Amino acid sequence: MFRASKATTVLALAMVTATACIGGSAGSDGAGSEDSSGGPTTISYFTGIEETPALEAEAKEIIEDFEAANPDITVERESVAVEDQRTVIQTRLRSEEPPDVFGYDTGPGFAGVLAKADLLYPLDDAYKQYGWPVYDWAKQRVTYDGVLSGVPGSVEEIGVYYNKDVFDDMGFEEPQTLAELEEIASAVQDEGMTPFAFGDQEKWPAGHLFSIAVSNLVGPDGLNQLLYGGAKWNDPEVVEAIEIMFSDFVEKGYYPDDVNAITYEDANSLFYAGEAVMAPTGTWLVPEIDETVQDFEVGFFPFPALDDTGISPPSGVGGGLFVAKNTDDPEAALKFVDYLQFNEQRVKDDLERANTIPPFQVDTAELEVTPLFEEVLDDLSEAENPDAFGYNIDVLAPADFNEVMFDGFQEVLNGSRTAQEQADALQAAYEKAKAAGETLEQP
Image (cartoon, rainbow, N blue to C red; front, side, top):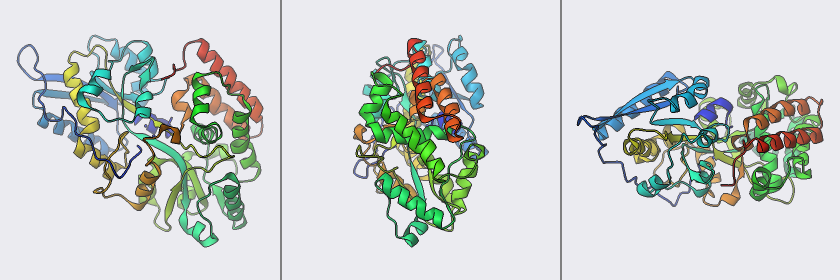
């Protein structure tokens, strides 16, 4: 999952090219359908509570704007805590009055479970009707058993933020290989600084590092074989990925001491304070970095190649919008989805104010964004080529596999489990999940 609970609720990879423009949405200006009494149609929207009161207020304003543009549709928005949303969503969707539209994580352990239970409204026709210009690879992430069932809310990439001032002072460029990265890390240590701001108290950050390494070592095709084909999670390339990120880097002192006791936020604080020079995490951190870091310039690069297989930065869809299978008014529900995700002004506002990257091409020429966010967008500019990106594994893997992954990596980090033992445990967990029908089918 991206950024643990925040990104899974964004629940949560958008790639943006400067040459394309925001596509107009077919349903933006039409009125909604009316109920049998001739009054306005009412649809319900079930979503997670926003992170701050200001964002919560803004979310309510978005509803008001939609209703003003569509006076025949009334939206009843219900926001609940993320953990409550996960607990009650299946019950709510099976009730006599299910939410018409809801936001949820797109992973197989979340929306994938709802799809298997036949609780999601199929959206193939809606994509054609509205002309939703979502990247093909992003649509694959909301396709379950061959049925396109969701609209990605945003896409993100996992890479490395770095202190440009330190790099410049030490004469380093952005590394392209593991050897170049380790040269930088060693030089940083010699200056009394920590190479990587990484903490794994919450366990999920290790999943990001694992995704980085495996994506680079096996590439998208190899990941597809691991997830859908005959490749095994204890194949040599996977063992090597674990060894590099969770054994070698610990032994070389690239992470802070007691890494399992350090939170994600505290690790980021080491980077903000200039005590750590690089921070491996996702593009969602741009707004916080822009707001917090004032004493040095920050850059962003994809994690370098670990061998001759090249660079495939993990990217994917953290969360999305879905329509309930039993919605009473799919026309109004789809019009609302269209407005939330594809309204031109909404897209522009999300890019400029929240640095939320949509899962389709937009024209960046008129956008007012920070230099760091512009650099991130440039790095994501190859989005039309799905082979350029790897996967964030825990978004696509079943829940029990993720539990083994997160718990096991803490043991590898503290030296109580070997890379091979962890790889064997991952393979056993995946085989068990596959036998139980809990893994995704090939999109």
